[in-house]
Length: 452
Image (cartoon, rainbow, N blue to C red; front, side, top):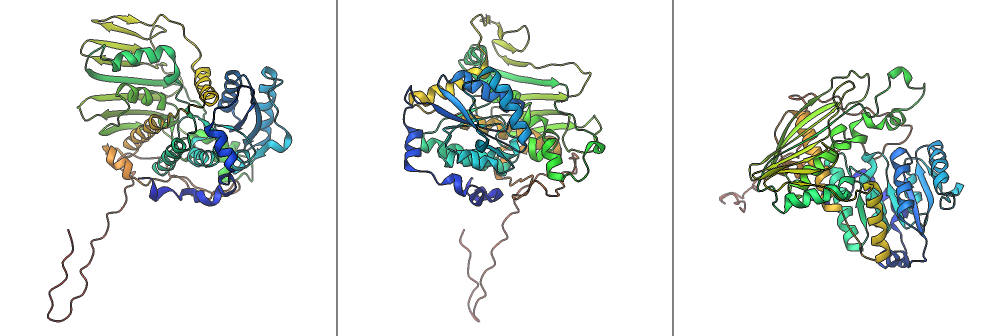
């Protein structure tokens, strides 16, 4: 399914320099890193999450240095360097010529001699960044989600598969997968401790993450693209919407409980309660996913101020129920009661420890299959809510949705898709091929028959 989407966003032209790598670079990525060898780290996207990821990477890697940074704004790079230098004064060494600015700055960073790339820009850019990093033979930490539309999904999935061939490590920012207590809990579910599953209900109810400012706050002369990138969370082509950007954590845990197999179908609801002059995302969703065994998993999310916060996972089986997010640690109530009593470590630290240990050992790890599954399942829930239609997994794989043009520039005008309206917004499927016409027959001959 990846071939028709490989040229999206003019990828082959956009990453020409990054794709030219030496044999030595490829060999370096596949070999065990010597304990005395300093690993050079590059950060793409220097906001709060990117700065946090860089801090966790430096904390996890005893002999690593942050040597390159890329962002759309020079000031953001400076703030990130100042913050990180307070904790790692001897290991943040980002010279001025390694501070890259602009929408295409990721290419310069990837081509700057780094060994490991941390991807933390708005997720609308993630598929192209993933492929560029893999093509250049870099080990990768990729924040979630990994795509915001289906064309992006196919490109990112192709990057995952290429990383496997190159023996590159790819660690996903689905941080709960690296939580010790959650790992123990889901191990028990998958081992059958609560019996055959009956239902899964996950919630992600919180306040607004990045509220959209009023149109009057937009400086005169600021382009559409710059305004949208600076307020990226509020535009689906950049964030994927709240379900795909934030509540995807809950979707990921549902997929985890279901053995990382895709659902058969999804039907959803959603809308926007908080008025906004600009932006095109919902502030609440509900998605009901059905698997082939008839089990229905429900995911509910909300980002509205003044409402009860609620972030739980309730997984019911024939012999018990696992509850996560209530009472501090996961617990099982049922025939075999259990509560996690072991040590808990910072899951954000653990995911970076796993990445750098794999590089040091020369044993590549790749979270790609499950990270891409959870990303597409979240997009599926969003599309079911946007359209008001039941969406199947086969339809998701066949969909050719592309939320933004391939060649947007910082100063461009761009009007994104309108606020979705269930019942009116359509799900994009490829047009069926036109039937072949039988070739004209010569006089006295029967028309040629089409092959079955």
